[in-house]
Image 1 (tube, rainbow, N blue to C red):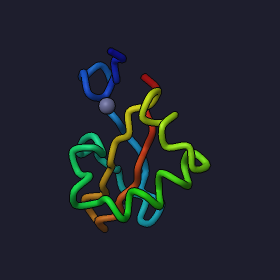
Image 2 (cartoon, rainbow, N blue to C red):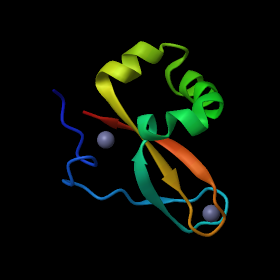
Image 3 (cartoon, rainbow, N blue to C red):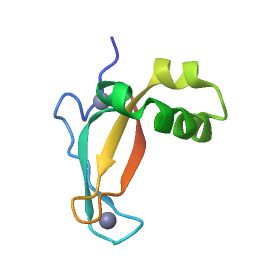
Image 4 (cartoon, rainbow, N blue to C red):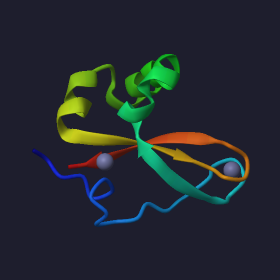
Length: 80
Ligand SMILES: [Zn+2]
Ligand SMILES: [Zn+2]
């Protein structure tokens, strides 16, 4: 099984919100949010992988990041 550094606590994600410049936080794996975000995620997955969703599922861990200030959400891919 592949190891994702974020899931396993090897690394802490730190990113910058595109909207307001605040620090984005990692709020977990995208798959943990699939029920709520399924429609939203489909669009983003297609953008990320040119429609090849399986390659992302196999080689990357998708994380959802959120801005605590403006609630902007971004999906990031972590290579496992
Ligand atoms: Zn992960
Ligand atoms: Zn923000």
